[in-house]
Length: 482
Image 1 (spheres, rainbow, N blue to C red):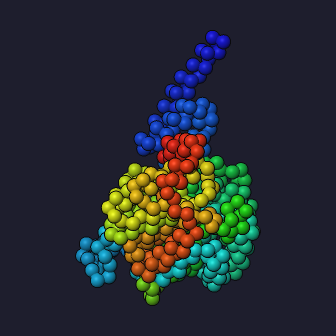
Image 2: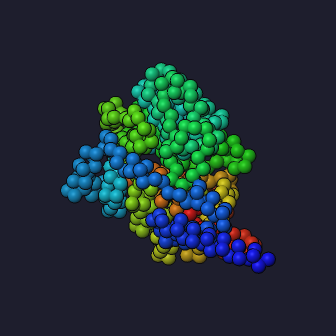
Image 3: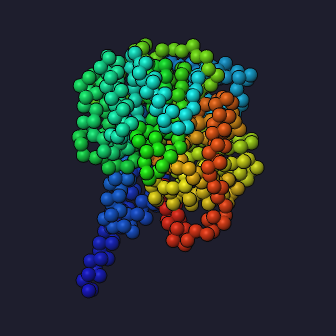
């Protein structure tokens, strides 16, 4: 027994030294460092297996591949717009508020995100309507269809979309698909074999074409983009899968938000797609062609910036945009998110807004799709409730919408959740829109969803069991790595 005790102590000490070496050899935030030390120290062997899948960073070579890609089609526009902003020509005072002007400058400086005007926007809050419109637009494609999804499942809707892309490829339309191999679990590259035989191409984002799965949980391509002939673009929260049409018994009705954009904002979506494509493929990179970037004489009223965020950037662009919107609110802030795990800066922004008399409403799901993440979401919901934020639990099905609306004037729709993973660990893309019409439409959707919600109260959390509260507190400790 004494020998066993010595062996246990030696193994424990070796595990501690290994944990310290493993965590500190890579640069990361203090909160994430301590979270990993906790996991590796108290879960010997299991913790290191988790680290292999969750904690290991993307190689610097791959980060470099993304950083060095040309912002095809918009490099000159970025320089021009920065000069126009300095000369106050980009956003005349009679066209936009001071708050919006500051946000436009923020994204120009941090993400080189151009401002595009006169876009037409159609909002979808139901998967059936979104996919019908998307399929109809793809059928009209004459030059190219570029598709980028975190999830592209081999199921009914996935096969329908793949078959349609095959039809377009057979017609001679250029078809390119980027899919995330982890997000598309169960979909191997063989799924796209006929598409490639017909002249299309499909590539896993920083993955392998081999059939065995990629278990790395972090640094995933979480973007959802479709660009059709350079004129039409789709961006938002819907992935490709039957569950997003409410066909999953587990989740039931699926509530999400997506937008269709017609206008010059599609140029920015196209440029983002090309950067991701050229960083992913090893050969046959895309080069500039005028057909990819047709300028539109848009008749719409919406000004849009397409903003990207990910491990390739030192600045958390989308999070900064969220904080800027919240800090400048004068009346109300409406948020829908499936995962509510804010870092300290976002938590403080929301709390300060509520303490200042701004009506802040946050809507979250009533059910988990990831247990640990949902418990952490509950913890932060309770924290924000204590600060005066109104928390609503959506009961009709699963809420996957990622939207932020401030004062009915500025809105954000895209792939980024209110959590560490979206801000730091995954590749995301959002549309920030400066338009009262679209913003108020999203407000009406929020108000409609509110009728399907339960407003949470202090009593709701007080009545929870001690075991549930423990799981929430424990999940919160791991929130920097969830």
